Length: 378
Image (cartoon, rainbow, N blue to C red; front, top):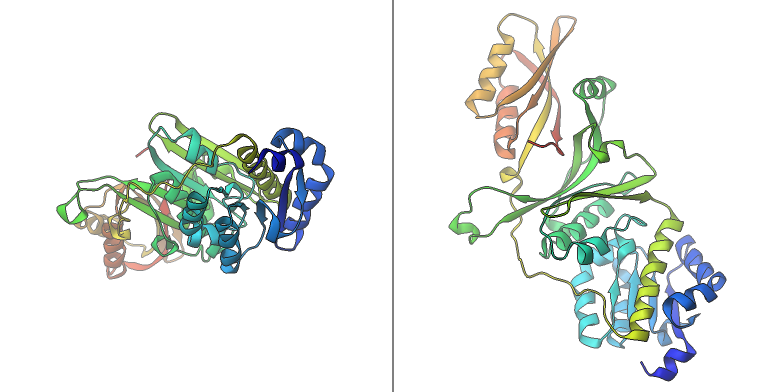
């Protein structure tokens, strides 16, 4: 950009329609003087064909060609489109790097919760071990896309949407919620991005692996995410040096608009003063571990016949499969009893085999509930 262009301002196009687009445009119009001081130049709303900065408020991947065209013309793109970043982020980032523009997408993960910039900048010298997220209002596709983005940023590895394991929350009974509460656990729809420890085999290329999942899980009541409810979204990041960090905020149009405007001001500053957004980093190329190799804990609700020796039979099944029991609660309900079992950490495959074997055990009438337990120190 020439100095004359900077003095006369930068063209901004708001791509998309709806409440978010209207909110962003209104803020640019109403707060123009303040934004000019922060950005170092005037931000002027205009058409996409001539804008140096494009703010994308669309929600589908159909906007990819238009945004790629803007980047290839030397422009910068600021987007809140989660699906777009998850599926086409690498192409957009490559175009930005090749043609001298920027790609910003803070608003694409958890709306107004500032977690992208910490992962790409503040923690760029640290080693992230795990990212956990609770996004109560996110639908299945959005939750999976956010998990892919978070894992990509945290582990410097390109993670595709298809790499993410997904499981619906399903039916939840008051009995299970009360039993979990008695164990000081809370159920949450959890996003889990974590490094999988363990011995690396030659078949794995000697590389550490990662696990990326979205499923219901129990968290200790003391865990910060256990207190998160709609409309709040939150993310915790555990890094070797920084320890556990938490980022939270409201899932609202105004919060998402705030994140977009923050990226817009930064993109404008880069135009005025020089500089670029952090480039995508995929150098680690860590493989995604199969679900069966992922360590976790289980909460199980077993309905068993209420007779002497039933608990011993159940315990024997766990022992045969190498799964250690951490806690057991027995509750009597008519002719049957419920055994609430909390395991120690084990491989998912061992836990699944245990559940399969329990369903074939004579004293077990049914395994009514199986939830994973995350966020513990074990």
